[in-house]
Length: 95
Image 1 (cartoon, rainbow, N blue to C red):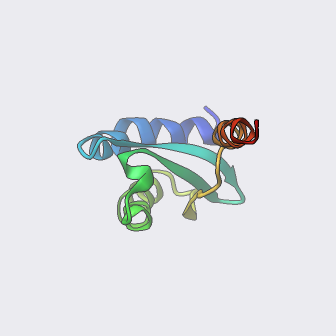
Image 2: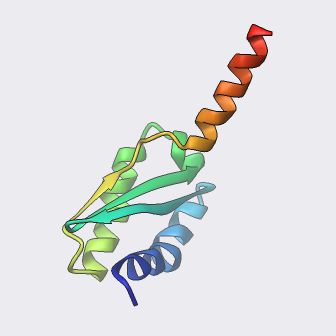
Image 3: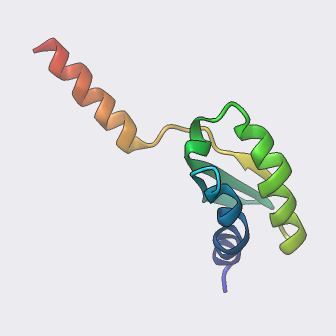
C-alpha cells in the first residue's frame, strides 16, 4: 500500500467519522517530504475553526497512526472547478 493510500485509509476510517458529526469531511490533496496536505469538506470547509480542527484532530490522528507523516497542513487552495464556476458567472454578467 502506498503512503497516500495509507493516509487516505486513516482519514476515512478514523478522521471522517469524527468530522461527519459536524457535517464535514477531509481529503488528502498531496503528500510531499513528510507533509500531508489536507482539505476540509462540507461544513468543516467554511468553519472559522478549520485550522484548529486540522491541528487538534487530523494532525494528531495521522501522526500517531503513520510515523512517516511529520506534519499536516491545511490546503486552502481553490479548486479549478470552483474557479471555472466563478468565471462562468462573471462572464454571464458581462453579456
